[in-house]
Image 1 (cartoon, rainbow, N blue to C red):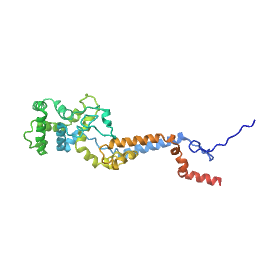
Image 2: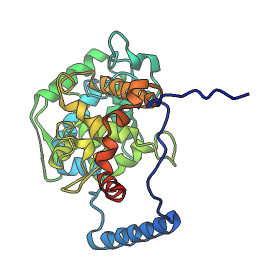
Image 3: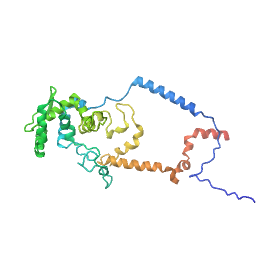
Image 4: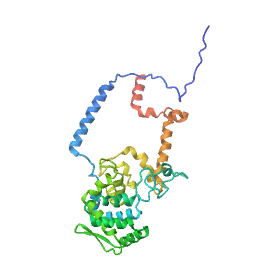
Length: 321
């Protein structure tokens, strides 16, 4: 009995045409070893010649040393709860609902996971850890026992007076500011000595690598943003794609940072969560490419592979002729 042979039509979504060209032996182990050795030698040679492009890390000490007035003004904002981190919301506090994705407040879903109280954690707590400061201890006690209205009156009086720095100390003309001048001046001196850097990272234990508090404090002032702008690392400068100085950075992040440069995302207060949502959608679409019939066959239908391997196809064509 003769078996019936059914002819099948080539399906570009599923079938792959049989290769009819030639074959060349290829030693991938040899090629990989050569590539590794060359790259390793180049890496070592370039590192010896040029060194690291990274700058010295920023710290509370460097901030208070180069810009003590900005540090003092930021410390006042931490005390009265008007700094950026004090008003940020989750995961640090409940001061604001956070960024939204349409009607959804995603930050509130997460909740306060890293509680930060700006006045206590950035100012009052570190100052209370200083030994042998009876005058400062008295001022701290006076401030903490005062009513919220009294504290606000003191802070307004201090903020209204001009602040300057000379001969290694803060100068202010504040009157009726209670203990606030002593608190801010002592915190500035603590920061300039480097003790505040250590005090902020050891509040949760002596041995720690949690730099949340110093990073938030730095970000609340203008020093960090000014350094970032000078190094072309700001958000409107495609900062995530840059390295410090003129060195190339993470160019593969262009797709992510691109969205921050176009309206309305470049001015939206919800830019972070919106960009995240866009990237999640694009990631899902990329993962689904093998399952989308028309999309997965685009390379074969457009024959873009013939452009990429044009030299090979020229050789094959000349042999066949």
